[in-house]
Length: 111
Image (cartoon, rainbow, N blue to C red):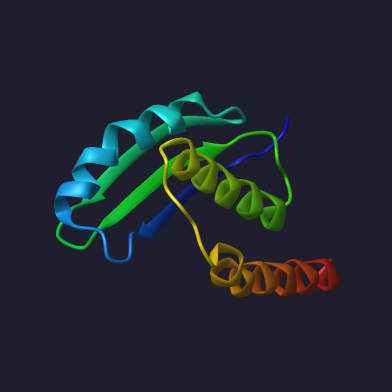
């Protein structure tokens, strides 16, 4: 049996008004629900802070680092499909990737 991970990723639309957050919500949600390799998708928005929170199960990935990378790519895909832009995206998630990789290596060393 293949393991999966439940993830929650919150992104902030810098400079987006509450109206724009609300206007783009349905397009982002529809794009999220069309993504493959995930299940139990949910999207919420905090219009006052211009934030979207993506929650879903990553399926069939056993490695936590790869699961995080895949989850981040799903969120980015949904944002792009809805006409959003993600400048400097990779820089923001590089720390997460490095931390996850170090944790995975420490876990391997203990086994």
